[in-house]
Length: 335
Image 1 (spheres, rainbow, N blue to C red):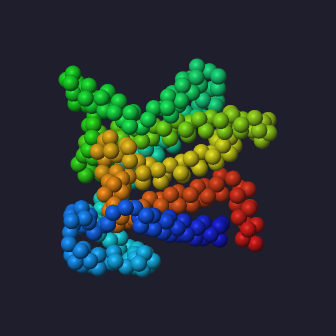
Image 2 (image 1 turned 135 degrees about the vertical axis):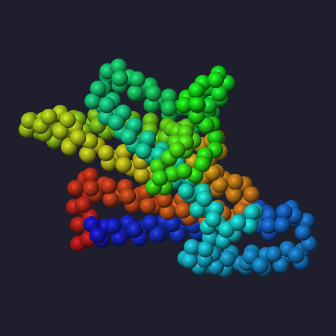
Image 3 (image 1 turned 90 degrees about the horizontal axis):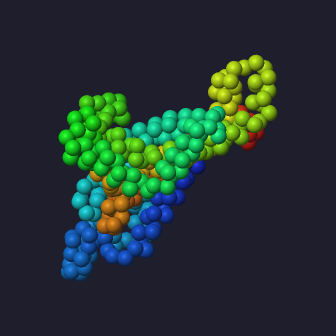
């Protein structure tokens, strides 16, 4: 397993490098000049001044030279300076990544706990009224766009209670991130949890529905397998059969979904962050792309790419823990 882990870790580095390289060179295909963004001149700056600015930031170098210089800076975690705000990308990253990780962490908790438990219940009670309710609910959650669901939540739990004089404990903020009050980085304290509820549920809604449906399908397939009948014939209780044999073997596709969602909910939750005014990575990258602030886009994209690659690494390790055949295959490859 040691060699298996090292191999997957090397793949993570290659994926991050490849994604950064592609994004870097794509910016040279976009129209406009970053130097105009620095000055806000919209092409009206004198050519001599423009040349000085380009020389200062290395924008007059050939693309390959700029790429080599940028990779050298990345190796020391110097992500450059925003062309638009002249703020260090490292500072922007520290601020936005912190907000995104907090929101994404709780969205993943909701997705995992609610999605898996609902899917298992639906599989065990299939064709019952509860199964029908779960099926209709997951289809509805998957069909409603995230930004529409966010706006509905704002009206139902924020605007409506305020208009009708509901008590404070029944009102939820419709936007913003609230005071910086957290325990162990991701656990809200004081009134901070109120700002987290609506965006976290909104962000997790579609993924939770998908996880529930996949869990139901895989658990039904597992229920029909021979080893489940063998476990029951040995006298194990239904709970032991379900938890020890069924759930563990049915979780492999679910682990894949959740692992993929790690990068999504933390790095590119643009719609949710925009609707609720949550200052995270996704909304910041979107603004940087629209203004062609490529230093910010590249710097923040590195983190998103690493999150995706690390999530896949965790999924591979989870496969090896859930399915002994993966471990045996890894040993065979190591030989």
